[in-house]
Length: 56
Image 1 (cartoon, rainbow, N blue to C red):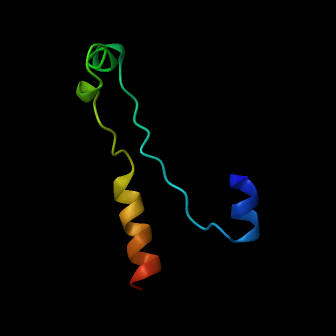
Image 2: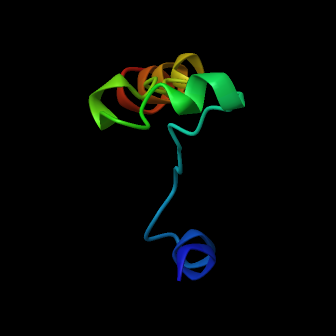
């Protein structure tokens, strides 16, 4: 579905907040999910796309 939307033009940008964490970092949320590290990897790329498409 995602690739179809990109191909037909109904979707033009994709992004993910996926970040890699090691086993120790992942274990922080074992007993309390609120302790899981948050991901913002790639946010610098998304902001430049928003600026280019929305402002320029």
